[in-house]
Image 1 (cartoon, rainbow, N blue to C red):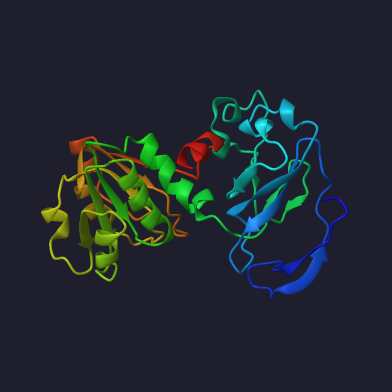
Image 2 (cartoon, rainbow, N blue to C red):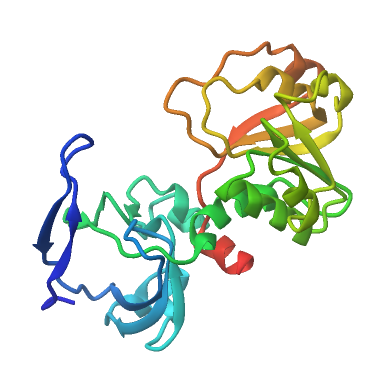
Length: 279
């Protein structure tokens, strides 16, 4: 890796044009693992990588993370996070919550622990980012037999959320979207048992009130009808936001939270152990 030269189109800011250039990756450290990428889409986006280990640093076996068991030839994957600090005093890393480490290394647009930039790789396996982003909150919040689950937004994350909810054995799975354009698809192969089109179904919040134990919201809209979504929650239900609106979260009345004991939370990707469980 040290002797390699990478070629790619680089954007130095959000408004600057892409420039074709070369760069050299950081030196191979004792705790690094080198991977030959085998699966990728026909474009470079920086994460969701699948490949085989081609080199393992001499210090990898000393790490506290599950990566210490990797050896040359192993099939591996990388999502939006490629590393964390691994410090024994880090409360997140020491408790298996590597994805919440404040010193984590992003696979793209991040920085390695030595301060050099993380340039990322080619995209391939959607489970490594989109998949774990919905799988983790489903499992953490009790999705499974006897539960009624709602997935808001039927796109990249949402369709995986439906599939995982089905695989986990949830009794009822409700797909929630603005229009009915994806109704046939979700009620067919994606495993949904019910579909709500919020822009088309009149009185949907009242019709489906108190029907869901858990909602995973994958949408990134700052004008989502959060108040009506909360009406769908059962007593002690949980609303988990994984989509990231650039604007502030929409305002809503807190009485539905109080009267039904509903909890609102968020989730970010997942830990290495959760990724292994998902796969």
